[in-house]
Image 1 (cartoon, one colour):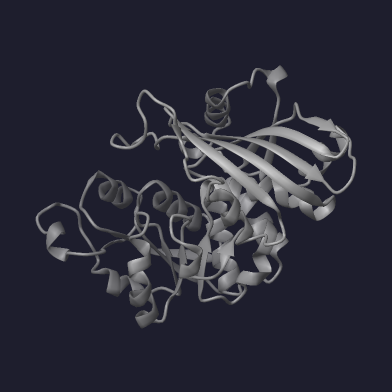
Image 2 (image 1 turned 90 degrees about the vertical axis):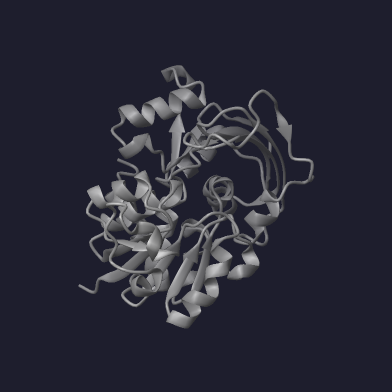
Amino acid sequence: MFMIKVGVNGYGVIGKRVAEAVSKQNDMKLVGIAKREPDYKAKVALRKKFDLYASEDLKKFEGSGVEVKGTLNDLLSKVDILVDCTPEEVGATNKQLYEKAGVKAIWQGGEEHELTNLSFNAYANYNKALGAKFVRVVSCNTTGLIRTLWPLHKEIGIKDVSAFLVRRAADPSETKKGPINAIEPELEMPSHHGPDVQTVVPDLKIETTAVKVPTTLMHLHNLKVKLSRPVTEKEILSVWQKYPRVMLVSGKDGIKTTAQIMEFAKDFGRERGDLYEIAVWNKIKVVGDLLYYFQAVHQESDVVPENVDAIRAMMNAEKDGSKSIEKTDKSLGIGV
């Protein structure tokens, strides 16, 4: 079997999860991780037996006790594709480096669509990434919106969407970001999330607004969807049930908050308590052709399977998107 040689630049919230997901694929080999600093995250990578490379100054690692195999350029010489998980706007500066090395690359949603002109979601446009040189996996919020809207758009048809996003202020490990005792509205209205969805699904009419609140657990979306025809609640739920990356949860089971969703993911035995799926409360409301629902997005992990599928598509390792999705889902325990 052809093994795709993968490198990951950045080992933060997304990078460490992508690295571990890649290491679980039977058609991929994680060649190494590029890190800027010899911090505790670098030591964790070594404990997991991942080869480490210095992304910037090799001298930073001298005398640190953190052994590196070389520089980022050394890593690039050994891989077929590089997943850039560096901080927002930093990744864009690396494009020239990847081009020079002749290596394909994936960026995350913090970068602009224009960096690659190809934004990705496995359900919606897997085929467009086949053989692509550069791809951007859209943000956690955009991934969440597409995951639940695309099945409805494909199987029923959507006229327009209005979505209100309640965003987490920071990730759990971050201490210098976000409102502490406030609610922070996104004063740019509509917010950027709607246009970002349209980089993947251009014909989907959607407007979004957003606020940040003092929580680190998840994002919450409140959606109003005008469909192409009247539907029933049963029909909507049956559509979502065909897509394993959408998880229906029930208030009757005691899952009424994002905290309980994350606790469920931990009890479910997920690594780090991650929830790759988008959680949708099955208490939806349908009035003729209007659909109302709530969904929750685990911002630390929902984009991870998309990165894995993007690798396969770009390397032409699997031409059939549904087969790649099935393989990725099985390796990560999605839909089990």
